[in-house]
Length: 341
View (spheres, rainbow, N blue to C red):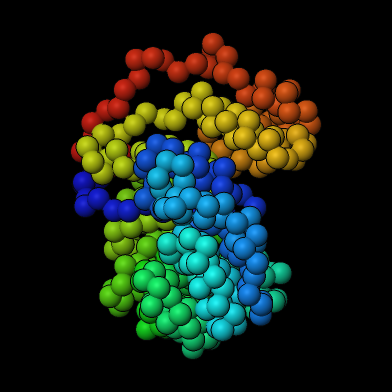
């Protein structure tokens, strides 16, 4: 794998998964360049401050960033241009430094209510929404960005939707490499992002199925994008952004993420979530995260099998503790590579 120019790495919004605590934990090593909130659903009203603060508590900090200084962008989802523009202005007044528009959510409930990927059926609607928000925010000095998929059920409209977002004033465009119909089923069509990247003058950011350093290289190669956005891959391997940044900067490959690092991440998450959620819900959230890890790590798979029926938090956390047999060797160190891993 030949070393390439450094690119930015964003953390994708994942409804019900990537919240303020997760954003803070995953950005602690400084490898992420920005994060995006779960979407704030906009229908036809100007929302109260508490709604924005519930989705983005970082608004209460001057820089609207995680505690480690990673910028947090607030995401809106809806279809009413006027309502979205008004709420974008409201978000800026509360402290948002950048507003993102969601045209990618594939959830059936969201799409039935004319939100997310449903707008990708009509590129003109994408343009109208982006333009309304961009024009409302321009006098306030902040940018609007957008995230799309490769169309709703037809990739042939993907380029038109991307061009519509750019024409409307989007500062950058994140593209998930599947249609709404394809959901999250592999493969990701990074080569289709390449068609978009070749036509747009704004930055295009590749998203979808980047689980490993090898995937990152392939996504960049096929899409032609310098920047990427990670979602499920960061849950499966909390060192993924760090791994990519290390290779970008030094050509080195970090060793496999040890179980102790995964366990520490899960334990820190539980410690913070139990402060405001019932323990049984915290256990359910831990299982959700461990389930993401198990597909890419044998130790995580073993732990998940052993813990999947546990309901008490103390028992679950005890089951995460690394044993001496699984402790990583203290002599592990990165190795320098110049070829495809």
